[in-house]
Amino acid sequence: MRRTAGVVAAVVCFLLVPLLAQRGSGQGGQRGAGQGGQRGSAPAAQGAKPPVKIAGDFDKVHILEPGGPAPRTRDGHPDLSGRYYPNHAGRMLQGAYRIDETIMRQFDPAKTPQENPVFRPEAVEKYLHPTPYGSCPPGGTPTSITTQATEHGPLELVQVPGRIWALTEFPETIRMIPTDGRPHSPDPDPSFNGESVARWDGDTLVVDTVAIETRMRNISVGKTGDANAWLHSEKEHVIERFSRPSKNYLVYQLTVEDPDVLVKPFTSAPHVWTLAQDPNDVWTEYICTSNEEPEFWKKVDDKTKEDYEKSGRDGSTGNGRGR
Image 1 (cartoon, one colour):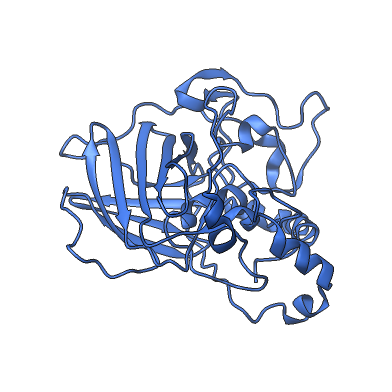
Image 2: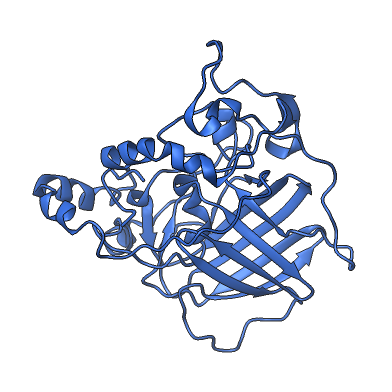
């Protein structure tokens, strides 16, 4: 199970650093495109310290160059196809080894600030509480993408005429989205991913999703862990915007509307993803099951469980959990 207490997760991730090195070794140049495609010097991963060999080659991680213009399809739209990571490095990173924040983060809060979601007071007790210990729910929409801010995993897009597939490795999710501008079904059946339809707005693909199963949770992008997750009502409406300003960069922005839960729609900052640089960076099966660490959950003390279950109800993080 990939859900563990924060300290345990950090220790496990640190021990797995040599293994993660095999997941991709993007070593872009030292100058690149930051938020909004701006160019600037990228600070070295180790600051002013002398070069030291780091497991996983994390000492070689830098902000990527834009890489030239984005490829386009025959119909003239940007080709969004590619395998992307939620950072500026074009490879998998993880929280146990913190490199420079300008490389790790997906947006600069000083340039593109992001407001937290505002919940209706009467909705807090019903909708605002964290995922219970030991559960392995499907990813859903938009969580399978937004949770990568803490999972650090890839998003793969496969674009063909009339449709696009959005694939995430963990939680392992497959979404097929028509891009021909069709409307929603008159009465769509609820599902974990919901019913998504898409249209092009200039060079931006706008994905509109409704009928998301109400047992699914949203993750407040820009925060950490499921302690900031919230349930939603049947009225939830999710709008995702995908754009590719250059070959190496993808920008993802999210809006969540839910009048039963939110005081006003929540809109994220534009979040940067970068194209995988290692040609051998390929798909890995990663499935969360409920039978991998049964003894761990038995040993978690009641106070820790109680603190976690109460966290997030008032919009705070509490102790939360790491990954």
